[in-house]
Picture 1 (cartoon, rainbow, N blue to C red):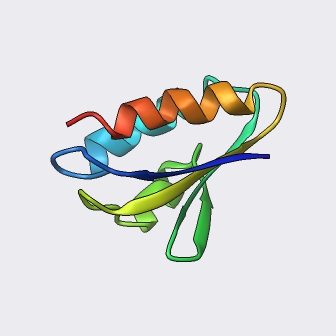
Picture 2 (picture 1 turned 180 degrees about the vertical axis):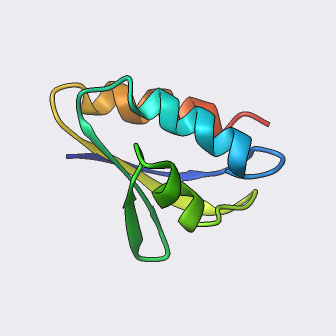
Amino acid sequence: MYEKQVQVKLKLGLQARQAAHFVQEANRFRSEVYLEKEGKRVNAKSIMGVMSLAIAKNTTITLAADGDDEQAAVEALTALIVVE
């Protein structure tokens, strides 16, 4: 399991359009991918799960992945949400 804490820098946070793009990218990886906010962990490959976290700008979240491409998954998804 590879985990990383990141602060979301997207102007609108992970709202509908950004969340959809995030989930699409997460689905490119074979690993199980998770997002965690304030103790609630969801499947990052599920649009409903990601939206349920209501992640706003400057929110600190934990990205985690478990599988053979876990580090690549976390790093690629981190790059999507720390861009301003």
